[in-house]
Picture 1: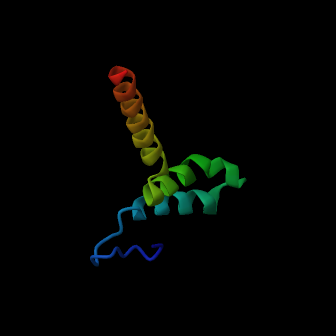
Picture 2: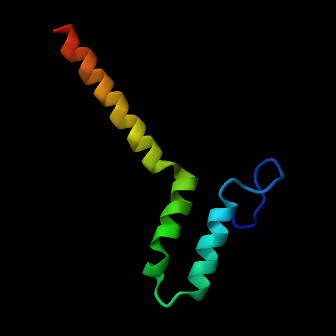
Picture 3: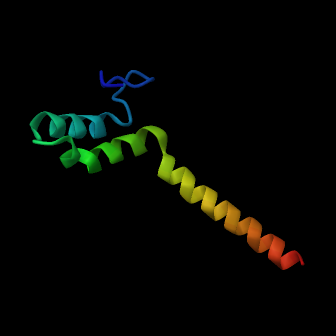
Length: 70
């Protein structure tokens, strides 16, 4: 990933996030200064927040359906 090459031979989808994070880490005094950029990079890689949001909306729909059926 850090090479910049994606699976199709073009720039990887998270490469720009990686470059921002990497640049921040090379110039910061403490790693915690780059925590937001790290969070953005990891979200791009794993979509964890997006999955949580989708899971919440799915469970809400299930609750609505179960509540309406009884």
